[in-house]
Image 1: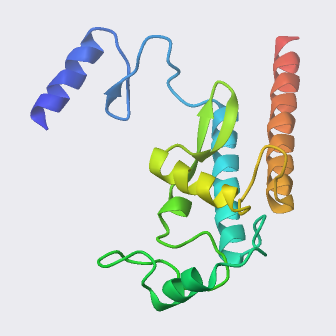
Image 2: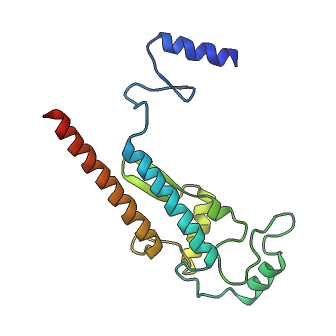
Image 3: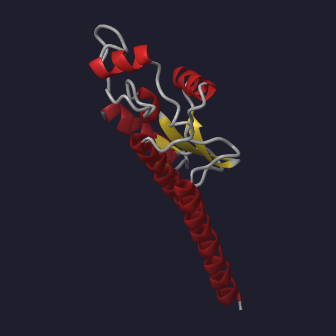
Length: 174
């Protein structure tokens, strides 16, 4: 701990700024912008909505039934094999056998904006396998109405905040 504090203080004395115990790179903002914070909130809401959709079995392709063999294995808790815990024993498709795929659904804020998806190769392969069978949470052309509603609300909030800030700046500038 002492060494870490010593390093932080030596960096401060060199004119560098510290955020959350780490040195901020030149040009990096000290705090996330209001838009980034709103995008982060939107991302969390969308991910939670998608997980809830999967839990309810309301995703695209949910009507496609499991094979009898898989249905029996899953309901008995033997679909993953010995020593692996199963998160769901539902016989209706729920995209949740081990729970790992849905737990790894996340969001990122990048230069392209808000990205929702799986950024883990193993889980992405599961997503592709489910999509190949016609079961998926979302696709570039298909977004659940619950998610569209959240995105509309959040985008409206970002635009409204931006307009308020622009208006405020104009008033201050006069």
